[in-house]
Image 1 (cartoon, rainbow, N blue to C red):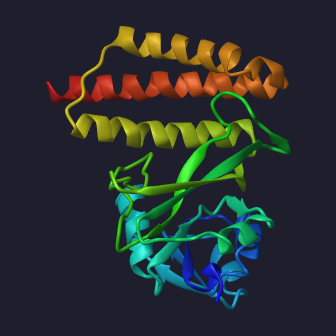
Image 2: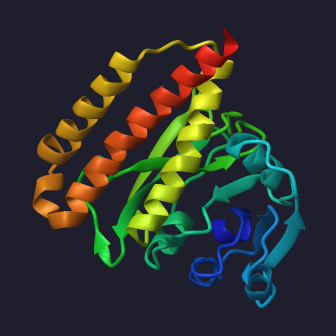
Image 3: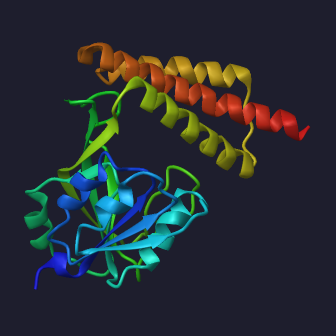
Length: 255
């Protein structure tokens, strides 16, 4: 029996008709794919229902990415889980790598993402190699319940394994898409920081913008990726600025 027979691929999805087909196609060798839909209104579910190994569940409310992913994991029949996003594709050669791995209950596997802006892989601006913890045993660990920037909880006795260039990630399709994503994520991030009692200032937000842009464009090689490198660096910096300015406004509204 192969590891993929005992691993449930788990996906949180909403209106992903452009990418979900390629994502599910890359998971054909997994015995079970759990898809938790968060209120799609496009053809996402129609596409998903074409795959015999896919089980669709629904959760209309959004509780934050960490909690939503744990809900998705709870629907799996296997204890071993591969968490994958609806805009990610598991590279074909990685399936054999997963099947060859020795998985102990406390093993957690990080997969490296190849992040794309349109048709270009962006190995700059902190976007590469971009390791994310994605394979784990739910009896041993789970996702933290962060509203955004969720992650699998790593423990002192975790056996860490890494697979490079494992996921193709359609991170950005256009400037409009990255601006929309930045606005949504910075709001969620600011809400999370506000909930934890974090304080900030306008000066701190400006400093975050300048520091992030210089780091990503000059030191993380965005300058070598043409206008796309500039756009990603600028939007990363803008995201940092808006995250802290939104937090600043939330704190002011408290007063």
